[in-house]
Amino acid sequence: MDKRRVAETILNLVGGADNVKEVTHCFTRLRFVLKDERIPKDEEVSRAEGVISVVRAGGQYQVVCGTKVQGIYQELEDILREKRSGGGAPSGAAPTSSPGATPTSSSGATPTPLPGASPTPASGVSPTPAPGASPAPTPGASPTSPRRPIGDLILQKVAEIFTPLIPAIAASGLIKGLLTAARLLLERYGIDLAATDTYVILNAASQVIFYFMPIFLAMTCAKAFRCNRVMAMVVGASLVYPQMDALIQNTEQATTIFGLPVLKNAWQIGSSVKVFSYTESVIPIILAILCMAVLERWLTRVIPEIVRLIAVPGLELLVILPLTLVVLGPVGIYVGNGIQYLYDTMMGFSTVLGGALVGGLWGVCVIFGAHRALLPIGLNDVAVNGRQNLLAFAGAANFAQGGAALGVCLKTGNRELRQIAASAALTASVVGVTEPAIYGCNLRLKKPMVCAVICGAVGGAVMGIGNVYGDAFANNGVLTVFTYAAYGMTRFAFYLAGIGAAFFGAAALTYLVGFEELPASDRGQNGE
Image (cartoon, rainbow, N blue to C red; front, side, top):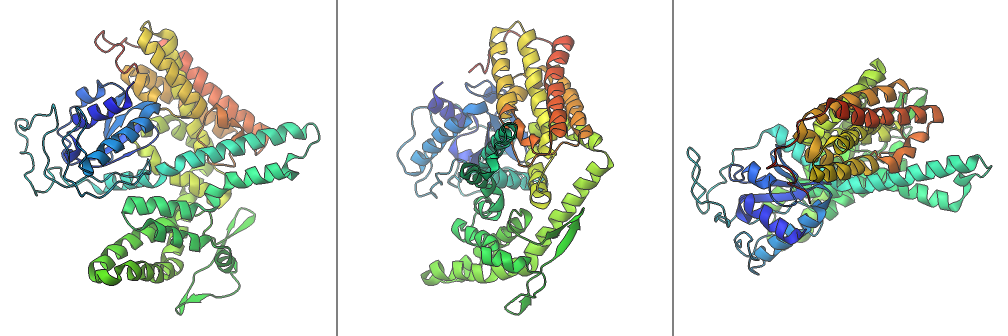
């Protein structure tokens, strides 16, 4: 597959560069924010080479490309960069936008703002509006798309904030799981792996993303809220600086900044006392950088350009750091505790019901991209309790999608669909990436998706019976199963039983229930 050609085709089909406000990507999807969502025809886009499906959700036009999405995105980014530099559009690409636009960050997950020039129809896109549609925007006019609902905007920002962190979180979970497996294995031979330098160093590497979470979140929040990334990271680093952390955790001594009280606290969790700390915290830094973005825009408007370079970042730090320590940080901590209380209350009522709900509905949330909004719950769980079960139950959903795809692979007589299903089953069960299974076969065939939801709920319920927990935040797949062995072999056995019930149950149920084979015209499409 020529990723450059695929990127050009997708860009043309969504209306060209001038119809795109920004574009990001996650594990499997290109996420466009379009000026006019009426231009792309879903059927045409979904039939394009390299495209599995199209989803309109969260105010975004999402093109599902599977595991090849990063390469396609990089080619798309190169095409857009060429247009902004005035280097000319490649053959078949959308028309060149006006030069002098803001350059795109090289980060693969960073939104790519596009020029605000008047849109020119891309190759193959008719300039004539559809009957009943509003005319295309004239030069200098506002985009034709209506203002997005606030809920869609929130979901989009949550995805922008947390998606870039997922590879590092997944890598940390993988290392943590492998260390747990090695430690348990060597304990049987009387070897204390935890006392070795190798274990200490690798264990520290697996904890870095969580301990310094405010710094990493500051960076991604700054990208999402369009403000100074380095200054945002300075704010995040200030919260976890060792001397600052010791000051915050010393609840016996009052601390002030500019005469204002720095709020501290400690609270009871079970039999232990949790001391107020910003290490591993999630919500405080998000609130801080959101306010910083608003302040930065105002300061940029009112401060003369000759002193703006120094004055804006300096004033940002002088305002935001005290505001965070006195107001925003404590509010964020208590909001996080409130969310954690609600989640713990639900699990306390019935872990079986909670596991069934998450295991059954996680795959449905993936369809709409809403699962990203649940990630802060799991991250906050790790920060507050040092463990999490959200992704354990989500693992049942992942394995169920993989199992349903395996059932499709075993049942179908279509060679191309069998190849797609086999690849999707492997991707879902080994690394926990389920979009290829969902969009490649399960959702398209309908009944396998229902089977996956049912068996994911069963698997989650089994895990709930065993009160399964993990000591790291890891994407669920075969490579990370030992993350759930840290709290004893009984819980680990229930985890294995849960993913087994989800995977093999979904495969068997899909095979027995069957499905309606795709029409001949649909067979083999998206085979690459």
